[in-house]
Image (cartoon, rainbow, N blue to C red; front, side, top):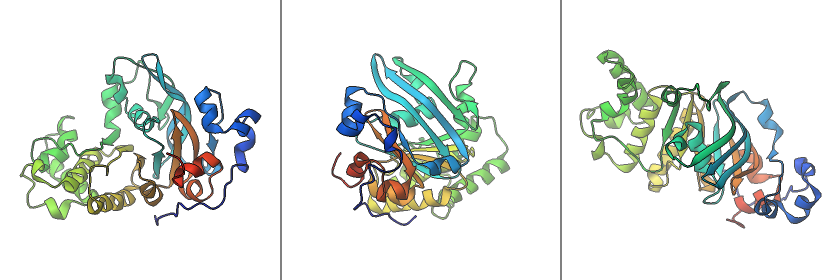
Length: 301
């Protein structure tokens, strides 16, 4: 996707769905309403409703002990597209992302309410096998985290833990995944060497190869370029563009230009609330809310 300019000239605050807000919210603004704890409706663009949905989130809430971090988040993630979560630090982007594969379950004080579904199957519930769920959802973190083993064993690790021992199958998956991650030509002659000897950008692409080896239904990327230099970042962004269609990607990023370049849909979050969600071009060029415009143009945050 070509880069979308972030110098928005037109405020569409009064357009579209702004009328669903209370008069007090319209008068004082969304940010003030959120700080007071007032209820308001997320500004969801109608284009979302025309997409086939892979991941559904409905009135989802999360608490760390007594502190609430997510408030009634409802959104639909389109199949085969890239969706970016943007917003200031601490707004709940990574928390929401980690909820999709239930990584927050590892924190004792966490409590959740609401629903999430993956291709119609519930993500939360006593009957859900979390290990099996995570096989359906790949995840790549901020910093590359290759395992201290060979490049080959890093890539096929998801198959190893699932009991696959057929060398032919493992070799086929390794090559396919490394090609998918744009790393085959760089790694094919040193598959038996340690992954820790690779550069940072190569390690991150290796982590993506490992994530797609199990052919997940959703790929989660938590600021995958934050620890990389501009050249490596460019390669990851090109890779994201190549992977969409084959994978449904949900990415957290602080980089507005990256969101505009790589994503089809963008969701703006603030203090644990989903403020506005729609096609990336509309969010950056014709946002419906003044608050969204202020954030994407750098006047806030």
